Length: 568
Image (cartoon, helix red, strand yellow):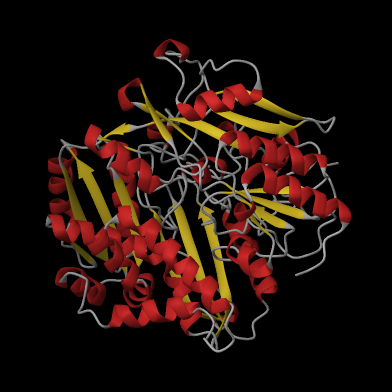
């Protein structure tokens, strides 16, 4: 183990005294899964700290700031742009990661119409808690990663797949920030009266030691994006419905990208639909989906629940390299996935200590296991894969079911497309297959490392009035790419575009070419995964970050041209 300097040794001892020796990780092996990004990013850290209470989290933050360390707050570490890990080893100060997953408590308030989530709460956990109440969280499963935390969605403007709800958003939060004088201060904008002393506030909140009278009933601040459903209907607007740097959806914790230390968020929950139906649409003409989107957004009395797009190539990669995840969710349910991920992480940590196993052994074993099972996709989905290039999964509810059935029956079958109404099993599997695409490119890279240089993962938002939404790349770029995976939230015009790149290609140059093309199309990026270390922050985000973190104490590499330079 690397010998620590006197100051660092003292800090580690203080941290161990605060959270317990077993929750202060310092070796390269024990910290690896925390300091390595889900898809990209990674670098050395002084330590990973795993506080078990909000008070411990507060004390750890104060110790790290007093010692002059960079702090990276991390929840589930499922981010796609590397923002919850270091990025390289050229920082001007040492880094401490504070992992919050031990603090996973959720408080129901207003009879479950709202919840207060602590740092480790996940969408899985929240969905399970709300189900008996007939309610659900803002997002379900995750559109481009599985196992995400509630905080990750709020901090990174994640939009989710559900059309009516818009990006994960709240103006009600409890957080700590380092002010311009370098002092740590706790800010209670949660709308709950908990006292004035920081540790008292945190203790009371965690214990749920507050009454209904302590909760502001009619807060002027919002716990979700109330206006999005109308905003997305403006199909002739020359701006996207949602994107990461949209100033109207940046507020303190929302869009903060970890530039503050977040302790709690208060968010709305949503009534589950009593009746829903899924329609599966296939076409070889992108313009047919364009016309469908514009008509339904403009003319339908109620918005669909979801409209998820998937290209045939993404269908194929998901079928071949997302099958084990599909089966895990189908047979184990989302409730057991966190345990499965934890087992995988422990297995990876164990095999990393040994020299003989191949890298990514757990992924290779899971890939092999998936092949032992019979075909997992319904026959009608497989038939549409053979017939059609473009696939749209449309989920509607209530009166919208009959309206959608009538409309689709009038426009299909056409010369280029067709549709069918799914059985409940087909509908569930269609959306599960779409979500399995999120990690399929990563699995493909693991299995085919000899052929793959890396994955260029772009997350873009197109204008609401854009008709030519399907990308056509120049031949010179096509030659550098093995597979293009296009999938996303079609009615919101948010697309995830994963490019599996040939071995030997200069990834940085390729991504610059890609971004230049997107600029020419007037696209905004990233759409919902925040800038992380992959994108330069747009002016609105820079302004937001400077206001939250004037001393650059929290992960200086986020959306900045230089990790060494503080906000100037």
